[in-house]
Each structure stands twice: as structure tokens, then as C-alpha cells.
Image 1 (cartoon, rainbow, N blue to C red):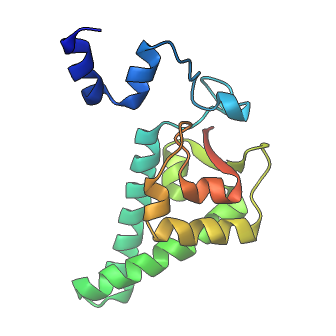
Image 2: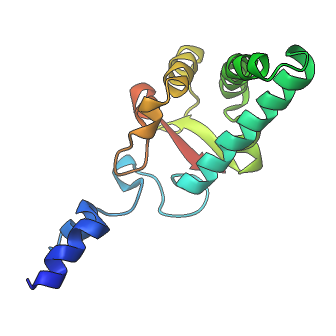
Length: 155
């Protein structure tokens, strides 16, 4: 290994360095038995983040327009509460929030069935804590999804 390869490996990250040494990680979702592409495959990170921003923006509009009486501080507090309520209600009933629906995503258990109401509540609380959602595994599932055995898939 020459100096350029050694210096460049830290920029690419540990996964790229391991792949250069011959490690095979497979595709996202392979360990879960999900297809590589198309419906039922693991949702891309970009779509999931876009869905989160759409949901947050909708909740912010509701909070500012209906509950905060023009106060931005109150709107921010109400947005947090509304986001939690909307997430629990929509994920428990139709397996997707409005943002997930627009991005053509849905939340299911790893075996393909729907999440139960208790699992949805636990997942939403962990999502609102932010840190579990920011820690991912190699299938790009956050700790909030892993805790309840869920995965976000394409429709």
C-alpha cells in the first residue's frame, strides 16, 4: 500500500477502506431479506429525510396557524407535540405519515407486517429524542427503528 492509499482511506471512511481490502457488505437490506431495489426495498436516506421535513413543515403550519396565535415560540412547542401525535396516529393506522406517503415510503416490521400501536409509540418517542434516529447500522436503519424491529421501505 502506498502513501496515497493510506492517506485517502480515512477520507473515504472505514467501509470504503474495508471494501478495498476485500470485505463484502452486500446491499442495504440484504441481511433483512429485502430486495435490492424496487417496492419493499430499504428506503433511501434522502427520501426519508425529505419525508421528515415535509411532516415537520405540515405540523409547523398547523401549530402556527391554529394554535400559537402568532407566537413563534409557542408554534415551535406545539409543532413538537403535533408531530408526535400525527406520527403515532398515522403510523399506527396506515403505516405512513403524510410525508412518507408523498415520498412513497411506508413503515413495516422486518417480517413485512404492520407495527402494533405500542411499537409505534416507542418508535415515535425515540424519534423525538433525535439521537437514536441519528445512529444507523449498515442497512441505514436508525436505532429508533431497530428498537421496535421496523424498517422503512419503498412502496
